[in-house]
Image (cartoon, rainbow, N blue to C red; front, side, top):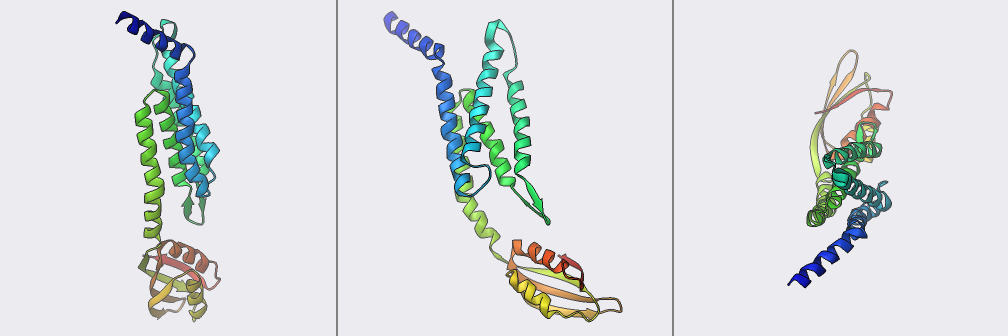
Length: 230
């Protein structure tokens, strides 16, 4: 019995002495970050395979370092402080993936993914392997399954009212062609003439994201003063 305990203790000492525990953490971080990064790479995102691997790997390394620094040489420290700095630093990377153009914001999912991958790296670095695996599985479900569902919901046809204020006696035909080019059709139309403008009250039907696209295109016309989507 004592011999088995001594052998077990020796194996544990060798495991930690050669830092095989760190090798396991970093290897798992590469696999988990790589799984999420591969999905991002296939989806054509800027933060792809290598980016997510490096984020997860670096986070795991920093968490392991934090734990060892806190307990080395009999010192008492707070390993959560270094982890908190990692989360703050990842915010700068995430902000770099967010872009805004003509009222449309893109990159939020990539930024959130980067932040979550860092959290997975910290989890693995702290030695919580099962939790890291579970979190990765959930992220993959969100990106793959819910991503397809979200895409279908976005492409769902919707009917929305629009008020278009244009120049006096403005011709609606070219505006209707512009709407059609954006995949939007006019369901109903009412025209109100005023001394200084002509107002079109419209009911439109089409994919929700295309309404903002059509609005920006309409505002580029010189005879269009204002476009309001209700």
